Image (cartoon, rainbow, N blue to C red):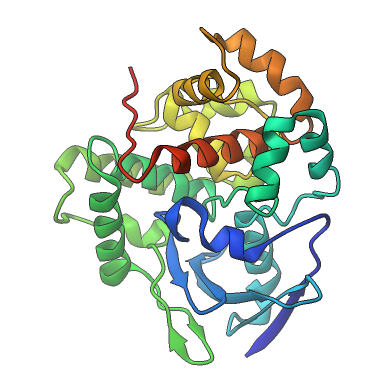
Length: 302
């Protein structure tokens, strides 16, 4: 077993991440929440193995963890874990956004300067969104858990196995699954092949200009504008950006900022104060607004 240590740059609360969206991983991927810790389990990008890492935060603010991941993949697995919790970004300027925008500031104080909890990779993000099309989050989570049990690796922490979502090469073996129709299975095969071909490499996608990355994502099976935005911003862990297809975000801005109407131009104008953490602010505002509405809030995309 190997111990790891991460020093957050800027304020960070693992407890806030644990409670994100009602409880981590909330459909993000394999793993779960323990007493004061988070367990992450995922295919390691660029390899034919998966990793499991348990993380906790000590009173000195450092995030520490343990894993049985072999040394050959430890660096990549650690980086993916950091990216999933937005710890790969320097957040020292995040509080300044709240000083410029009091609405963001109030939510930062209320939620311990929450950073977005992201998918483990672009691959896990896009497969999750395609699985979840036209079904509930609960149904999607059940399907993903079943796929992990049937086709996923079982990486360990101190010898204890934690199922992970299937690696691309294993997902290609899928022939049928409860809750997935033939079209979704075909789309998942296409996405798995795209990952093997390098078209879903997370760091490559987020290094591209957004319009280029989004255009490439929209070429994949089952990926339209909404899913492409979600994969880039929440799958690749982009800190500064505004998803153009986020109609719910416009509604949240309308309510929180007391506007009679709101357009994409209004959102861009307000969001200028959030740079270089625009996506962090979007996630925080959406989460704060959703919690204020109560557990039964829903939103239908038009």
